[in-house]
Length: 388
Ligand code: NZQ
Ligand code: ZN
Image (cartoon, rainbow, N blue to C red):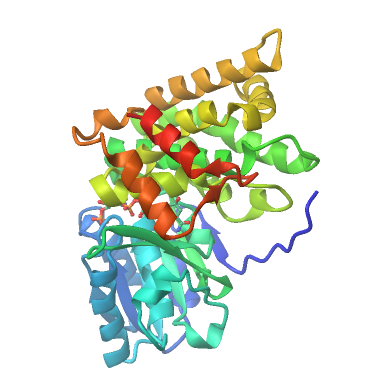
């Protein structure tokens, strides 16, 4: 097993009626910026509950954080935080609102060009230089409620870039599974597939000696295969909703990444598809992942075979046969979860996509991706073209 440090300071507050703990979780006397997205929180009563349970606090609201949050929008919030001397931010929403708040938290005291936070992948590690924040989660998917990563899009350049650092963990995250009842089916499907792919990025590499990590990762995958198709049909079923929400958090709160190699190339390529065509994050992963497994077959086949046997009960005479079946089973699952797995299903203008992405990666000097750093730009081109 590789050496690791496991640091996760987020107070994870899970279950029904947990929003009433807000007043004790937010530091006394805070001046709060309540940040939210396009307004779903007004329709499902989450906003009303938050306001009720924060009675007595001074609150300023900032709405309009887009899905795939925009740098330009978030900078408006940074100005408000400074002008109003905000001392605590509450993110009420899905991954986009939470990620947006992480950016606002770090950017407020950042000296220099704020765009460099994204262009240079700044890591925020000094707690005294960020605005503390908490979360009321409304969409299980990204794991952002219990990690310190964030993905922000620069509208001007159509680039989707990441930031993070140990100072950007939420102080607390209230995760009430009943909130998923109001999610459109498309977002529920996205949530399951995003969480599934997060596990795959950290698991589907090559055989190594972190036995427990493999078993934890596999248990999340198995749970998502078991409940995914039903939870999107029955989001009010508490058993399904609660297991789904916990899976999504566990998939990306840092635990399964410890001691193991990880890939993340599906996400890196997928982010480009969202930046270019505004395809939902999870749907870009469903487009790229199957091709990536095929192009990187030699590197991944042993782990693919293990995954196929343990998750889908595949059997076969050789590693190759089992690995191929594992890829087919994965595609079947993605289709079952409402995903289309070809880029041409989403845009008629796909033909120059591979060259565009390769050029971008070259400009950023991202010339070797994946767990073995053997996903070269030629391979990236092959993966994207295979996804057309
Ligand atoms: O904006 P509102 O009106 O709230 O509506 C949202 C939005 O339209 C809606 N929604 C959320 N909760 C709802 C609801 N509608 C009804 N009822 C509810 N309870 O759902 C839509 C999508 O929301 P969004 O936050 O964009 O979705 P998601 O949670 O999937 O987040 C996606 C973003 O997270 C990034 C993605 O790249 C993307 O920008 N990611 C962040 C990661 C991280 N920080 O660790 C990792 C991920 O891999 C991912 O890259
Ligand atoms: Zn993701």
